[in-house]
Image (tube, rainbow over all chains, first blue to last red; front, top):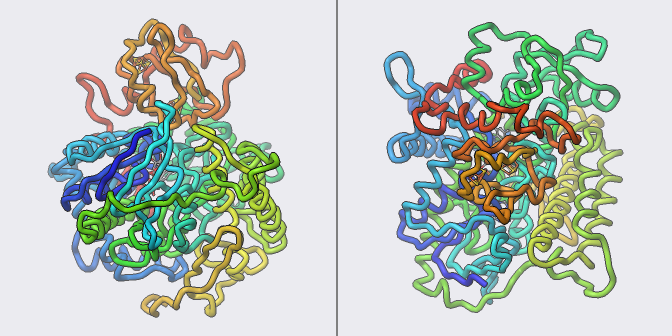
Length: 526
Length: 112
Ligand SMILES: Cc1cc2nc3c(=O)[nH]c(=O)nc-3n(C[C@H](O)[C@H](O)[C@H](O)COP(=O)(O)OP(=O)(O)OC[C@H]3O[C@@H](n4cnc5c(N)ncnc54)[C@H](O)[C@@H]3O)c2cc1C
Ligand code: SF4
Ligand code: SF4
């Protein structure tokens, strides 16, 4: 067994975890980071790439950037947080340019254009910087549970080293959860590592979630592939199988038309609204967008090809662990959250869609969580590694009944997917369909809570299955509670926005899931 | 999904084993990686980008290809092996793809 101590432990090595580790180390903390996969290739950013919410510090430009999404997000964002994130993102992008020497494109005057990051290049360089910061990285080492001290403060984490097939434990002064969102193993590009584990760990420690109703992101992909880069579909036309245009279908507005049609018949697509120049630029912008086409011999600008919608859950949704302080602390002492594991409502309310906010949030919240965790650990005055700890994991690791055989992790995953992937349940929401889906999920939870357990690598899968089940229940409980349409949460049976529900929804609990309105957002926006 | 590991090209550096996020590979007896858990492959193309020997090919499908598919036939694929590494601009003498990135043209248009 690997048994370590550190001031700060970071779970997850996507951009949020990488920034948290670097900033905690810069603040003087000793840091261990564990990733389920590999820091540099793992997570939603590494295999794709992101537009970044990067805005020059010009008051008018900043004002316009903040105003642009407020209504789309259902007026649930917060101006102070937006301003902080714009500042922090601007500073971090400069570090990416100057410290990591990221090869940004340049404009005609030789000035760098810093509005986007290609995933493989960005994350390869982040790995180098994390290592140079003195952080100890454990790759292929999924965390499976948190540890707490006698007072209930989070005091470390435990997991499994897949390649050595042995357990590990890190006792730490503070923990940052940066495990990404939950895409329910839908095979969306880079997202199969994102099974919502951090939210389960947080809930077991007593933390709250927020915005879980904003969890129904679906991305367009060529059918049978994984490549969910959606930006270029705004240059596309969608068609019925007989070649007639599918009216009302579109990438940004009109994705629900695609979903509704896919329930009945295939949907075809052609990217036929881009100029020659734009086509050339597209190839340079997102090379992996074209891989599935080139490798199948399809010319996406001329040929019709079938598309599908892949679930991205909370990865391109906005729900996650509730943030309680400016340092990205949660309501549990010693526990911090960053990136997609945390709620992004603070800067984009109930909608992210076309991106940019998520990557800005990942680097900003990672920075603050790392610094906050280092400060918290320093405040313990050297007691970090000496506390007596207990393990907090329950579902999938310590079942309530040790007898009897129940479902294995594969059955649990299949049962959860059957309720969260179908478009007519999660995307095209209706109370009459959400309620029975939640009943099925609650029953699945009771079963797995009683008996699901496995060891080693299978134990990791059991925990991921439990995390997905928990996620699904938080999502649908919140979706039923929000009896209106706001942000990406669209209820067919409640099509309008209800001024009385202009507040965030806090969700929590495991065996009993609950929710309550957060104290209303100050009326800056609406 | 990952379909091809070219034994002829592989330099047995273990990089793909190390970088695959979902831990799909194991080292074979001869040092050449084997696709041990194809079902876990998330078709992210990262191994292909990182392989220094252009020895890997990730087919663009989220499910395994049927027997006899050209997507699993090294000889048919030829220059397609490691092509993603070329597109990312990694490897000696290449320009990083990010330097040529034109995504900002689209993000500007999409934001407006
Ligand atoms: C195709 C696609 C395109 C996108 N485009 C944009 C865009 O243009 N603009 C934008 O702003 N955003 C975009 N996003 C969203 C953006 O990628 C994410 O917001 C960002 O990656 C979040 O960073 P993160 O570090 O929180 O999570 P991730 O990058 O997902 O990283 C999470 C990490 O945690 C690890 N992990 C998971 N579970 C565990 C565990 N139990 N133990 C240890 N480690 C664990 C994973 O292996 C992974 O490395 C896009 C997402 C996708 C999928
Ligand atoms: S990365 Fe390429 S060269 Fe290295 S072991 Fe894997 S296949 Fe062989
Ligand atoms: S495509 Fe991605 S998941 Fe599949 S083997 Fe390669 S690195 Fe692993």
